[in-house]
Length: 240
Image (cartoon, rainbow, N blue to C red; front, side):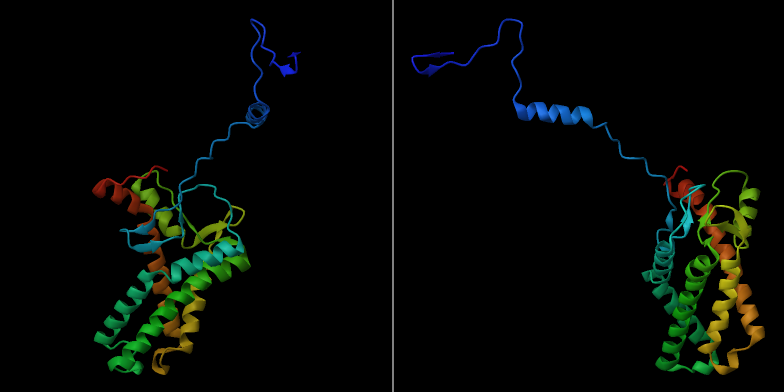
């Protein structure tokens, strides 16, 4: 209302609420239009490191996880191969080989140690590349270890051993684990290219491939039971 050029703001009548500013009204409308969003609960992945040191990135606690893309399989191979622990493990292996004069064609001294160290790193990289990337991509298999985490110790023990030979496809169905088995044999066949001439051949390749598969079974055992040991001894429990 205006009187003598002066404008008075109209007061709300009794019982009538005062209108909200436009900005507050817009904010209220937006908040009503948008449903409340709660971040989805993350399903637990693997424990990733045994004893907090040894890399075990290929473990999953999920029963039905999403399949890995080609890029994710490559990243799994890279993480597992070039983790700092692997460099230390290769150094220890080279030192033990130097002390026991394994692969004698490499000789002794700094040069011999360097060759053994290079061979140890090449072995790790070859195995991980074949088993976690190349064959899983070509054969559409999932390179991860699917931890059971429940049941009797005997059942879980046998389950962990069989996964080296009986894995999963990208679709989640069970299948002979060609990726692990072929990966072990092909990686050791490749090692003939850089091992000394006296340490090459079919027989040695077959024996080393068998040792690789046994090592994989041991790793699977550790992946299956380490969380239980970690919970029991160190009280760091992880629910599945």
